[in-house]
Length: 475
Image (cartoon, rainbow, N blue to C red):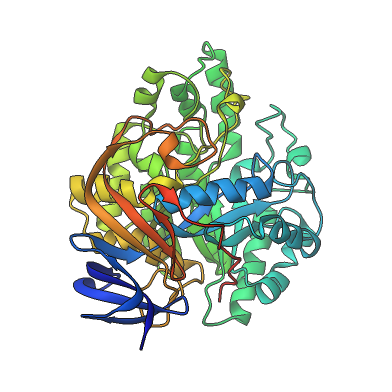
């Protein structure tokens, strides 16, 4: 066989297996062979480097604060820097994104049209049923659009933080966004699971308890109302995560729903997830952490000044960082994602509560896991690959097309120089965002080349060619 591309002399990191010195041959965008002395029309010498599946950044927000087409182009471009070849972006109706409500049957095609031709990576979408009518659309969305993953934001329940109002309806554009609504979503997702045996249909949860947040935010404001990230964490403390996880897992167990606990930010949240697994052993419960909750702390960021690190849930303490790393090391954490949301510095300002939450991080997905996980904490490279690629691909219906190195899988590959050290700068991340909370951090281990379906799309700091990404139906 004549291969279109061969990556030669590298060490392949094969998920759930280990490392092997071999060539990898690509034909028609697929992995066609793993062997020795392969040769193709194009050959890349990866001597001294590692070759891994492209990362699957399973928590992303295309178009949350900016036009969807522009955001898709500029932010998936940034993903290539971090070795991500697939992103799964959240979308919901209500304020932000397209700023409208209605049927996903009508609105979701608008989303696909907006991002078409603008994607540097392949993309999938998680959708959030905000209204009762949208809850009834889950079966249609699974069948007609290949969407097996949904979301509920627990902190939207009954309190609009942006407007400082106890009425969230203007923000969510929904009727009742309460635990009853959550349980109805769980029932709908479970029904879809029963109709699609062999596929994993799941509900992802942003776990912060809104009534407790109201109380703690009022206390922070009454106690001098400091304008820093510590105050934000105090206003949305780990207790709010812990209680919300208890509520969500109890309901999920009753409804028989597969769930994913998103961006766990604290030791209490991680321990609550562990308790839920022990309490409900038959519940399919998977845990996500983000790069920023693993590595950033409010004390250090507050010393630098500014509100660029405001995010939901808040940045916590160094102790929380280490406890989350322990969860990565002991297997409690299922995958690591970026929760990438391009948010410009002007949208942060210097007033804590109105500042928009979120920031980018997709360009650091493989680098942070290699630097902080592998080099500093002894995490195996195989486990790194599983955390950023294979596990999210399995959880969200992309495996083995994505996240694997099996024959016939998409040739989404990244060549890693795990010894390369450089300091993070905003410019090198190739995002439109004009700031980065990781600015100045020394990172050891960077992607050298990123390949999407057999085409080199990023090499040595530069994006190659026009966007080639596409929407991927998930089976």
